[in-house]
Length: 169
Image (cartoon, rainbow, N blue to C red; front, side, top):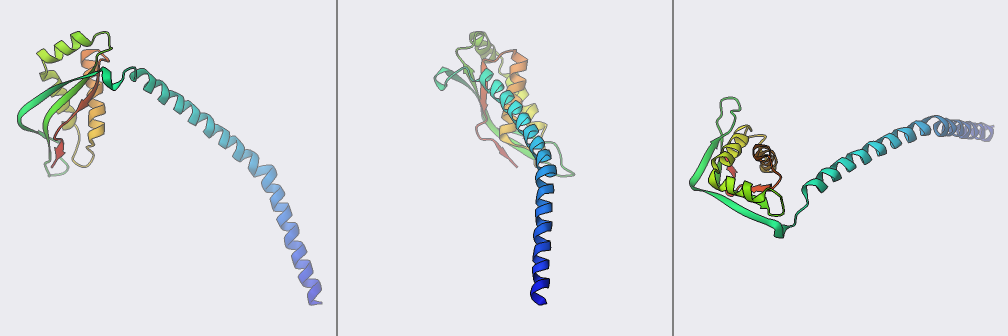
């Protein structure tokens, strides 16, 4: 009698397992496939946009770059936005601007920066000063500053900046 009950329980659990597997295959899997295809399409569109932007800006090699340093006599302190009642600042020893010599307007922009580098200094100071101590990131500061500098001079010949001695305290 015990063998028969055990056999019936095993058969019932096998039958339930088979039914649930069929439900899984015919109802859940198609929905998962549709979701997976949607995610793949979105990811491929994002990758294309990233590649397009990277291709637009990378039409130069390291040999095409010329740097122009803006050096300070002493380290400059730039106040950061306050967090609560605490004041913090960033220290900067200078700015180094990299120009793409293959750009059409390289000579005019380079000359303009040499004659009036104060605009670059102001943009970098304003960009650094717009962050708080907890959210400042040198890479973000550089990216935002280069974008503002390119807009200010209406050029793509300025491709990079470096911030020697960049510290926050």
